[in-house]
Length: 370
Image 1 (cartoon, one colour):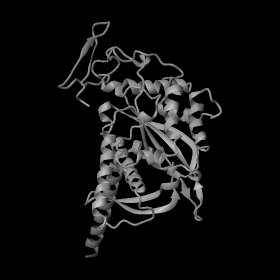
Image 2 (cartoon, one colour; image 1 turned 135 degrees about the vertical axis):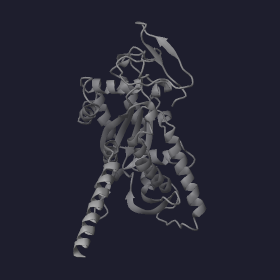
Image 3 (tube, helix red, strand yellow; image 1 turned 180 degrees about the horizontal axis):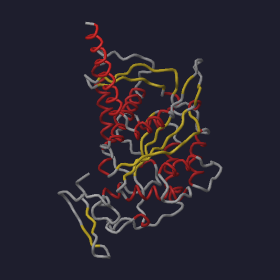
């Protein structure tokens, strides 16, 4: 009997260990883990006395596609602006940008860091600062509903909670069709952005420091969840390249689009794209001014999350931001463009083709595919 018990114990231990290994292997998504770490690090914190222990910060998170001229053009411009070779990695370019000195006001890096510096001089009595406290929510998977749990004493976007630190990081997906279906970006949307939306929707409703009764407020809770879901759906319909903006631990919104440069155009690409050349001031005049218009607003969260607004695309508020989205939804075809080894043909739908100068290359794309 003792031998039997020992054998059963050994079997149980082995089975448990195997389950643990499988679970860990299935949940590790490095790109998501990196994003979550960066986004969560922007959150302000309180000490035991209830005073601000660590001020919040701002994260601009880029999501591009490896077959997309607008994405490749942004990465080209970024590396040029921080004096790196084009062979440098995207992470190296972001690190160089984030190490820039804000006093270098004539460079892209200096201008970018200057956005954060200007936050310290903003109006201390913006509506965000007066109204938006830290809100906690929980998700009931069985009922598919987000519920309000409580609010803390931390005014999430107050002057004292907002620091001057700003950084840019990012990732890329293989194709434009992977924007929200790639494992990492899908998890970013569902596991980070959606909970942030739920917190901010509840925070904007006049229930300050009050409890929600899950029975008495059932109809209102359902209405809140409909708004949360509609906002998530609006984001899923976005086109890139995307620049997600995270401030003080919450999702502010996003800017989308970038120019397409001749410098990254290849034989076989759509000849209507890549007609402009990279200009040193593109990032300063358009990108910096666009982000600055958004980030400097002290009322950005109450404006973004006001009732009835389901559009997180901040382009309309950034007057200089006039770039194309995913090359107007036309991508580089990975089969016909030179320098590409993958096999990917066009599917049924609207197609177009053109011979290159050599006569051996053609571009094709499908406007309905994405």
